[in-house]
Amino acid sequence: MELRQQTVLITGASRGVGAALAKAFVKEGANVIVNYFKSKEKAEDLAQTLGEKAIAIQADVRDKDQVEAMVAQAKDYFKTPVTTILNNALIDFQFNPVAQKNAFELQWENFNTQFEGSVKGSLNTVQACLADMKENGFGRIVNVGTNLVQNPVVAYHEYTTGKAALLGFTRNMAKELGQYGITVNMISGGLLKETDASSVTTEEVFGIIQATTPLQKVTTPEEFAETALFFASPWARAVTGQNLVVDGGLVMD
Image (cartoon, rainbow, N blue to C red):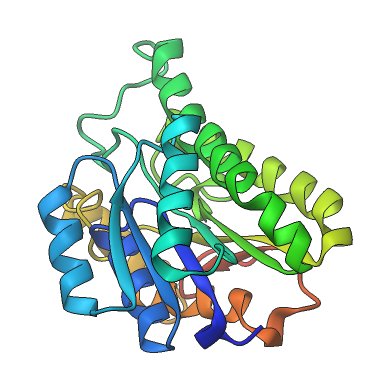
């Protein structure tokens, strides 16, 4: 299915990477659901800027009922089911190396917050769209991961562990859903310059990344978003269960 024929659900799309993803898909002619949890004004402003191809819908991805209601509202609005999911939502986390809890301070609740945002949220979106994808014999699911799984430049324990679990989720879903024409992949960026979540990242950390990256630059949200277009496009129809690291070559996996 061409990108211009797709209806794309992007979670956590009001700002940062999510907003860059929304802009990239609308530019290619796709319908886009700008999902948000708290950032109502930003989401609605973005959708208005993007035009009739976009709609902002509130839903907490951790809540199955809210996700199902969002998908139904989008289907009614666009008169077509969701074909493509970008699981991007980030729950209660900032990349702040100074404030990050160390091994002595961490609590299970810190991990559970990230597991629910990454894995439970993705499970809810997939299940809400799965019946239509199966019926149509087509689906594209792209989960947003991190290169910190391979290279923890900073020990963001709970965030990185949640994304590692999301990688396992990605590959198991790819194994089962391939029979229905559904691909499931992951894109893992490094720290992107810059998003709301990375706005508190110190220049020292960005400097380390830039100095040790073959391309000698920190990846931007726009560059990251363009990779998602590939996974959703017909060019990637034979690719599933993969984790593509998009960080300028810092991690070569």
